[in-house]
Image 1 (tube, rainbow, N blue to C red):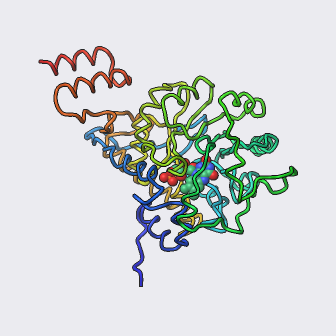
Image 2: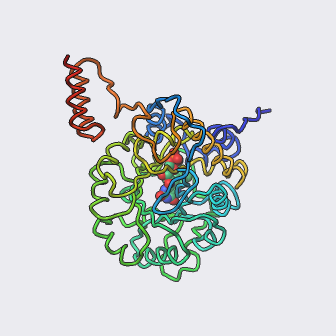
Image 3: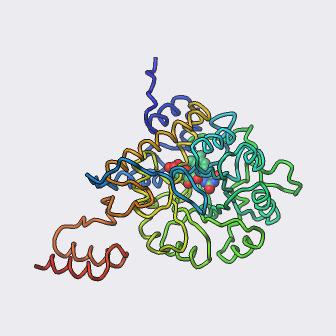
Length: 396
Ligand SMILES: Cc1cc2nc3c(=O)[nH]c(=O)nc-3n(C[C@H](O)[C@H](O)[C@H](O)COP(=O)(O)O)c2cc1C
């Protein structure tokens, strides 16, 4: 008999879910660390491990505040549920269970366009704010209908996913001999009276690949919800987000499901944060498996982090209770990590809490150290006075 895996951490849930979910489905959706077609996902996990925490002591951490605000919504701790399609793959109650778990945890669920329960069904069970994730379809009428329904149902923000609008590889489907579940229903399209609605077979190719920054004006004309762009991976695009007046962005590579071979998201975070300054809120997702990962993300400038795969692991093991447990684990681990890093208020997390290839000198010798100092100055981690005094010390 296979020994029962204890459920003490998020990776424990992953291991248990691997035992319970069909192999092709599990591999296609989540992949294996280091496995084929999952390079970006592997990089997310590796990069997260590459960032190390810097413990601080004797800082009176008897009271710790994990709460924060995202776009004016208070959340009890800085972990939100990323938009992920068809939660019914993991549990019959699907997004209804996830929404309840988010409400119990006091945090936000971002509902996927490809959800297995509709915008309105999910809103009816929500006890915390919801955001809606939009895929922008070639069919603008359909896009507009979805946006207006989300706003009417009280969703607090529109998260526009932009990282998978170009060509799409089908390698994963072929490699894992995976076919979309026959019962997969795109619930948000049920009852929409338009011809040629996207279906489960042509869903990805119905996205508007001609989408451009200028289309944000049209989006603004049909909604007053704040806009969050999901799938930013460079300082250049982050700056364009700021120039185009969006309220937030998510540093994300779609959990490695879009372009394979990109950097881990936490490694992209510092350049993005530096590029936008305080002009908008920056969030991140990809590879968050421990509360300490959340602390690393916030130290490097994210306002909050999202989890994707762990939603399915929790649901598949024990429905809403499983996902609630995962959120509690992350909360408790974050609380411990904060205490041991001398941090009483998560809102005060700063780069000094981590040692990161982007924040530490990892090259030997004087030249490397000087180069690094210049980088730190350019990235805004130190000011001119600190630069001059550190340089003088190095050259002494
Ligand atoms: C099974 C699965 C389905 C996903 N569906 C969507 C989706 O419908 N819309 C979207 O914007 N992102 C989607 N994503 C990406 C997630 O929102 C998120 O970026 C990613 O899962 C974060 O990485 P993590 O899984 O390592 O936490 C999906 C990811 C997975 C694993």
